[in-house]
View 1 (cartoon, each protein chain N blue to C red):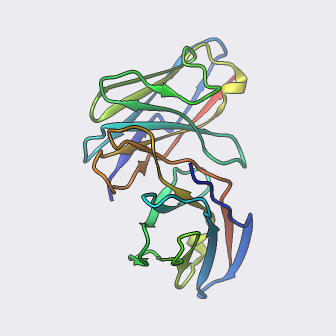
View 2: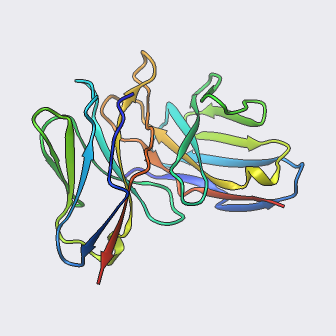
Length: 116
Length: 114
C-alpha cells in the first residue's frame, strides 16, 4: 500500500518552545492531508484538514494559532505546535488522501510529543 | 456524518475466525464503510472498505447487510499479531472537491488468545 512517513517519530521539548512535525506521502501526491491527536487509551481526534496550497480547516475547539499547519506541496504537510505546554503531550498522527474518488486514506506512523 | 457503534472489546481464540460487528444505521447512500486497525503506539492501518457489496482482500472480508445499516469485518484465521483496536468508519464528504475525512469512534479492542 501507499506509504506516509512522519518525522520525528518521537520528540521531547521544553515548555514554551515550538516543535515541528513533518508528514510526507512517499509514493503518491496528496491533495489533502489530515492531522489527528490521540491521548492514551483514547480514540483519534481530528484536528484539522489541509489542502495543498490553501489554509487548513480546523475542527471545533482546536486553536489554529497554536497548531500551525502548512501544506506547501503535494507531498509534505507540517504541524507546528507553538509555545508547547505539558498538556500538549500526545501522539500526533497524519494521514494523506490521494485525491481521487474511492481511494483510501493512508496514515503515518505517528509522532510522540512530550513537553517537559 | 453517519456514526458507528462497535462493541468496546472482544476476544477470539488464535486460529479461529474473528467477527467484528459494526452498526451504522444512519449511513447515507453514497457513504463507504472503512475498517482500520491500530496496534499499540502505531498509526492506523487500512484493512478494507466497501459500499454495498461484500469485499475480500488478503487481510479480511467485509460483509455489509442489504440495508447497509450494519457490517461485519471477518479475520478468517486470527493470529496473535491481529490483537489491536479495530475501527469501523463511515467516510464523509467535506467539500465539493471530493475531499474526505475519517472520523474515528472508540473502536473494538480485539484480543487474540493463544
